[in-house]
Length: 567
Image (cartoon, helix red, strand yellow):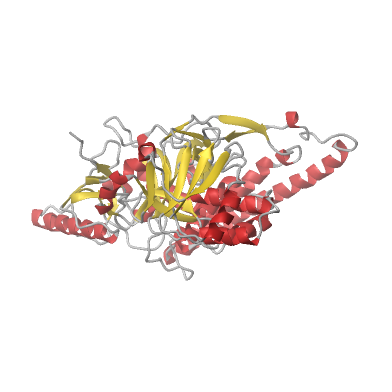
């Protein structure tokens, strides 16, 4: 057994969460410690081949158990810092943003054409042609502006500093430095089955004793190698690797050292970068061991949550209703695909290279609405990108890379969706301290026996006439609908429900009636589905998210848990 103790000398850890710029990381991920060790290896000339062999051995030991105390999260505030020289670039920002929006609209139009039915091809082809014309027009405007700026620069900057060259003349962009203050400043990474020889131990100590920071440069540390876990377990929570855990942390691959060196050769510490890593599920503490018996769906709990902040550039939230779920989620999928690296992963698109639907779980896009109380109005507060529970590291990285590219396309780091007549919808990734419950993944994923649909379930099969005047006909159709929903639960990895009750209206305040979600799908291939609401009760609690039916990847069939109140 070996263990590595990391003591935070300033009593705090400053590092940004991998999936949220405004959220701090806790506990520290092993990939950060290992990256600090690799940086140290290259910084000190006296470290050589033996230390390199030791780091490769260390990376091959797998994900560690992490012993870390609770940590207080400092309130995240925005610090406004000067950006790079914008004396030139800020004069074509509008034209650049217009071109970006036009290219996104063209991508969505092409996707609609590829997925459209034969009868819709003519109309969709016209939409593509119209989008291409708009893209070309905006490209011409940008080219003209660039030519003008180049000509102006020759006159304006000759013999004088360029405007915006000095920091005090530059605009300032907000940046966040999320900080965690642990109750106990020592975090321990433990490998119970690791047995290094004396040479490896000596080399690891040589590297660890030279590490000065983990995470941000202000996170000063002292590291040491030990052969025992923390003696005082009362000061720590234990994070243990578990495929059924709810927490996703980053760890390293056996070839992590090579990956980091290759990445540095590309970015040279200057260009934007993404930390190579493996994603590992963890469970926290002994109390969650019991929860491993709880059934889970194929959808994961590590969501990318986006908050609606404005429409058409105004600081007002566009009031979307849940009945517009399909419009919102398809626009979100189209925007993500337009920024995804080629070839687009089937996990993002949901289709194979031959355009046939993939049979394995892929990304789901869901609306997050105000349905948490009897006073809720059902307005859409945001949306989430839901990753499959079982997702390999390469595919997971592609998803986050696509979101990052989308954010990088805007100077503000926000995401813009073209919503047709509703205009441009702006969203941003949110911090973990978001007060509204329905924008928190836990609200939708906590274990419960009773679940109710918030967005209507588009049935996988036609159950018959649910509105027939003949009671025998509609009762038979209702029974078939309940059986179809029970099979939908099995399809996403859940047990057969104890009971299913269908209804035309939702049981949650603000959620629209099932008929308001029809027809589904609104366009493209496929049969139009019957939509219903349902109450589903399982024999034992199950863990969400619960997304059911034919529209589950586009936000339909999103169910809300109703945990039993503890006495």
